[in-house]
Length: 218
Image (tube, rainbow, N blue to C red; front, side, top):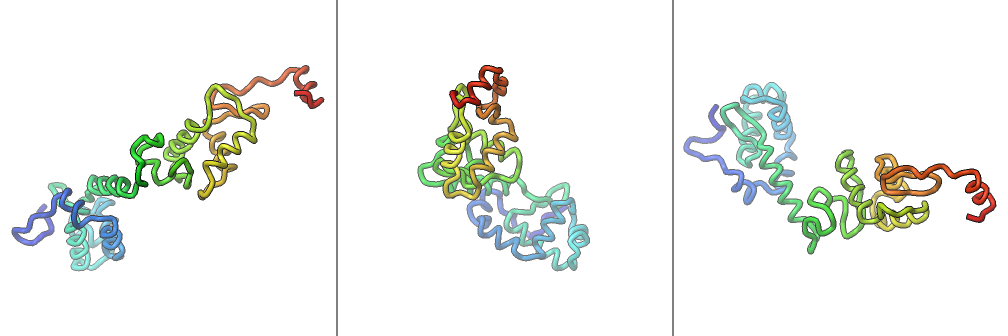
């Protein structure tokens, strides 16, 4: 299938698109047009020819063709042997470049114990928010545990809350929710009022220990 471009016109390379036309602002502006969003969705779902795109998007053929051209001019859509497709590599590259460009000054990968996947959620030792996706949320929680709790130590609830409150100061999530997530994911275990990093739940106290505790002598 031939590319949707004028005669003798060469499509932009991924590098050219990233460095010039395809910026985050340009991408948002590009997809702010409903027809282009519908066309992109149709191509992402498998429409590989202009006629299939028009049918899947519900747009008139000429309008669909104009939208395909605009997406192609920005490098978002490519045309190859299998027909039209979304250039996911370009979008991933743009995402990585944007993350690097918006990283706080002085922060380098692993300086705070995490790579770009943590930067939207952790800044300067503070938890900004928690990801919705479970695997990303766990990575953020593991980061918090690794920097706040000693695997060989035991903590009472007040100490755990104080440590988590520091992380949550100024953020969108409260320390109680973070503590619950840590328990639910098994990153912290709780037993008999004692918190530990993973490991086994402390054994149930014996009769003598319970008596001492009831007398307030522990």
